[in-house]
Length: 132
Image (tube, rainbow, N blue to C red; front, side):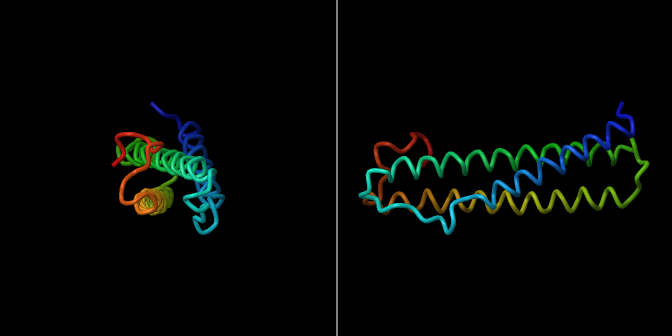
């Protein structure tokens, strides 16, 4: 089972992951501005933005899984040394990451919805298959 020191280490790691994820979100393209669809750089820029969006979603989902496991551990009665304050902090962190996950999914959906009209309502040939 977890010892109090191990639980604190797990919480610290989760907080660090959440902080890094938040910093990554802030470093995204300003205003989601992309080159004109006729620009030769357009496919590379769009695919890079899509890849970053997919990775951001995966990071948020992984953070949520980790926090969920920590909450389950605390609720099972193991390591209850820090009391209710720690529980509220974990719940708040989970809510914040869920909000960030929803926002990341919305950004990716906007990107995907932008590409189709740029190419006459269809995905271009360079678009990854199986994503519609």
